[in-house]
Amino acid sequence: MKKQFIFALAVMVTITTFAQKRELRTLERAVKNNNYAEAKSVVSELESMVGSMDDKLKSKYYFNKAQAYYANGAGSNADFKIAISDLTKVDDNYVSEVSEIKQSLQNELLTKANNLYTSGKYSEAAKLFEMLYALVPSDQVYLYYAAASAVSAQEVEIALKHYLELKELGYTGVEMQYLATNKETGEEESFDKVTRDVYVNKVKTHISPKDVESESKTAEITKNIALIYNSLGESEKGLKAIKVAREADPSNIDLILIEANMHYKLEDREAYTNLIKEATQKDPNNKDLLYNLGVLSAEAGNAKEAKMYYKKVLQLDPAYVNAATNIAALILEEEVAVIKEMNGLGSSVSDNNRYDQLKKKRSDIYYEAIPYLEGVLKIDEGNIDVARTLKGIYSAIGEEAKLNAIKAKYKI
Image (cartoon, rainbow, N blue to C red; front, side, top):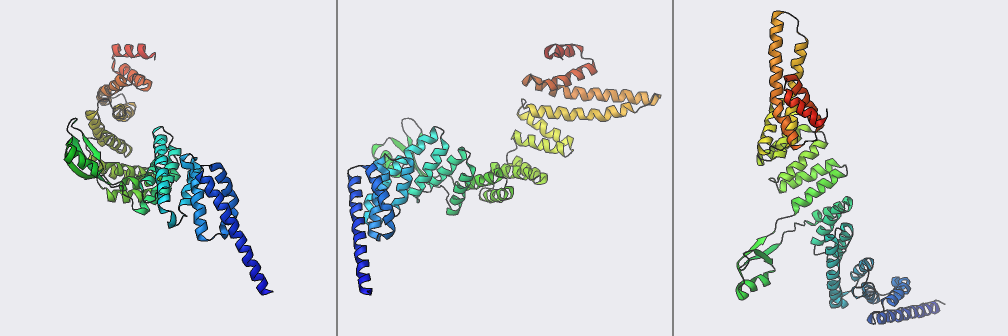
């Protein structure tokens, strides 16, 4: 009985193998005849048999299935994804054929991905760049493009996954650029090395060849990881990532500011202030940095220092409305103490003398604030709050002509 069972089992295996080979031949014919719809149908029939196929038949199955879904470039993006996956399961018997299909797929996907990106369809572009990376994992730039496209599509969690993988892979994006200057235009152009050398040494249309390494993308990738963590509310992870980025590129002001803003969100004002000051030392004419220092100084109660920063801003850019508004507000705050003291005085001779002194001081405050407020209205004519403030000041100091003009213009 045992021998009969073994014999029966052998017959069953033979029949199964024969059926597999027959279906595979049908699949091959359909692919060779470019009948991809039929080929897909045969693939569906073969799916249940794959588990029992030997390695050689499996390889043949996946190779033909990949061709069926690639459809000589006519497949959908979803079909291409299946084809890419199946090509990784094909053995060395199809090396040249697989290489040819991969190259065609790469060209097709890259053209589509670039077109989608330039037309603003970032989410779709990201998927295609991800497929390209799956197709050619040695070309990590495709994963970088997938991450950048996902960022543009505001799909930050997908972008984070890609950036973290790039960091794990140690991707830098550094590549050699082969440059030469066009004699006719005088412009420097980039080529592959062979073409550049031909133009310089044989065609003689270009001069001054040089080889230059592109900048590393390491700091950018780590910066984006930090920004995404921060946007997802994971500020501690973001802060850790940006510190790594700063170690790689310590002079990068953008990285300093990103770290500063992260500390600001974590309500660490001291760290924020120190980083803004560090950035200002590296870029002393950066009006936005100086303005931020003015705001921080004002919040800390140091009006004198705040005014200094705001004045520096206005020296660099007289039209910086916020700086002018803020310095005027700081000046007018001094009025509060003056009025409080005036209201507390009596009717004695000394009190009357002091009252006159304080009245003069209040007028001086008004005259100091006026140029800044008037400067704001010249740039931002619709600023009704500033207009009302000026109206009150003009009334207090007896500037009748200016008072009437502002009342007429703003109907206040």
